Image (cartoon, rainbow, N blue to C red; front, side):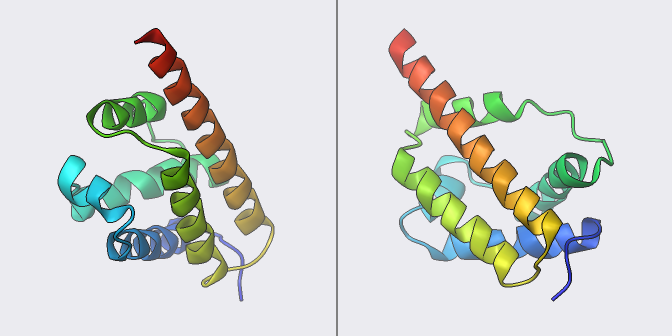
Length: 127
């Protein structure tokens, strides 16, 4: 198996990841009922985010933290949901690629999960 090398590789991961999320009843409602995500619009944004984060390509300008805080305001994003998210994310990587960039991507996802959970907890304290 090859390592992640370009945006096409990232698209494979992100598409597989969302397929897994949408098939999992414990988390799919976030994307189908709470946010009502349009995959054809959302996937390229995520590819751009991961490309910037992993490959240094630039182009992502959204506030990732605020996006998740907005979702959390509609429906609580629990630690369990982040655990499910990470499980599917890592599976999408491991089933398609292997190598240093894969490990970096999984590390970054774990870091993002931790940061988001801290930010959500801080918001909750402010209520």
